[in-house]
Image (cartoon, rainbow, N blue to C red; front, side, top):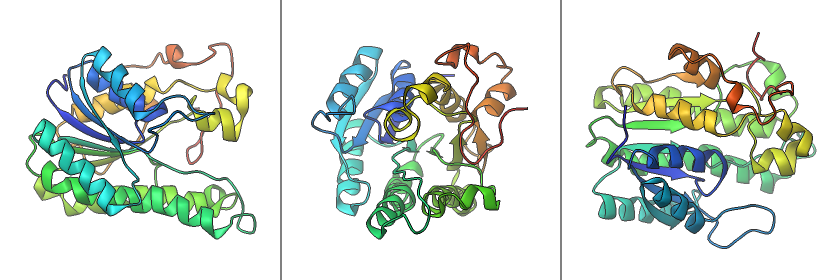
Length: 276
């Protein structure tokens, strides 16, 4: 398996899961467009598109940092055009950019509702739409959305209807586009973690140090994504992968090295049942 010479367009790749996926590809010598908003250092969030680019090139890849607002059609199209001009095409799209707010209906203001839907659902649709004409020309084209299985159960919606709708919108793109573009040979898949993942969202918004300690590192999703990208796009499409199940399908069952604290009980993520 290798992604050497492949070109990836990854949204939200300046830190966290997106950066981990980008670095895993860069280790093979891949080209990566870092499509994210963070051009200037954030007081609470580490990393910019430029520091990410430095990390990717140090890992052995080629990087193209692009300031991108996935809500803006012109911004996305310009970044896609720049990617094709620099690297000659696009082989893989990763829709990772996402907004979260875990509030009930009455506590969710419409500005935040719109933000989650514009970034998560609309941004995923838009980035896919802009990249598909180039993916159609690729040898083994993949689109991967960091979104959950479509488990249509009340318990996943009731606590935070707006957020769940926005994330499931990303998964509905997988369901529909996998069918729409199957004959074109473009794979559309979703990937979601069984446990919480140690990212800035966990640290700053959801659970602080304690939940970070009970999380796995973003590397598990990077390794899982790598497996998907190396599968035949004509045979591996329309799937809603959960990271530990995907790793097990490759014979990888010892995941202890992904734990932030191997002595801590892992915390389950949203939308999937805890491991048995």
